[in-house]
Image (cartoon, rainbow, N blue to C red; front, side, top):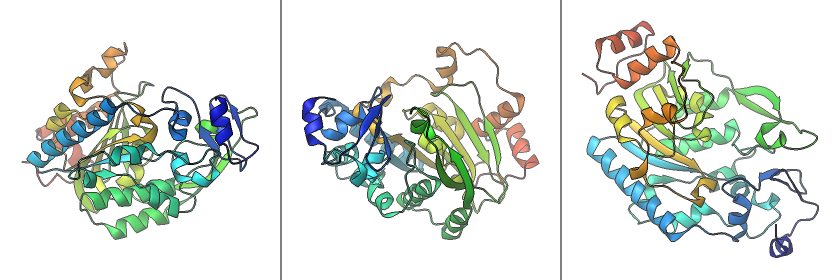
Length: 336
């Protein structure tokens, strides 16, 4: 942190420890790391113009592809904590990368982007004090905006999800665990009262991870495909309360080859706001199936996950349909 940044501080008694900024109110913000969120939030760094152009080109290509397929699509920018808890952040004014990008998007693309910073600011407890992620209440705010963006209505299902955010949990969070001594936070988490079957690829890595959730009694019989990061992964159970099939592929890119295989009804891409520090073109994406091999991961998938993955990635196959039928998951309306 340089002297110019320190002069901009308007709240006293803040400190930085292990890339975590702790404000005078005790709220922790991610300060360092590869994306340098503090420097972007203060305006010391700004995204390269080419990064903004790549973001726009990615969205335009994704929108064109999903429109051709007749698939609903939107992109989600998950606001960083300083964008939501602005008053707790010791450097003012806060520069929001989401706003920087939206201001330069073509007007036709703006409706494709969900950047729910104002909605989260209006919702108490939408952010966690010691975590970069949203609370489960905050994730529900995002889900409501996502569904509105693609024209899907399910108010009763969303209200049911809201009613089940009721299980207390105490844990340090990804920021609290970096502090010495370690600090803990408490929040209510989602405890579904509907059946949800979960399958995960495992492997202990990020890019290339696969999550599949099947909800036989979900009110909307659709397949939702997500391309994104941990913010999507933390709201998968929310989605399972609405949709019968939810598939999350951990990647920063839109993979057309996976869209071809999975044949989803709805697609969402997404990223944490800090990842807008630099955006990469979908054209340079590694094929999704090669992520594991590129990391030297040779372990085979667990048999149960492999069955679920086959059922999702080859939905027209008789074996796939039998797998879903055994789990009482209805067939997708668009599949032969």
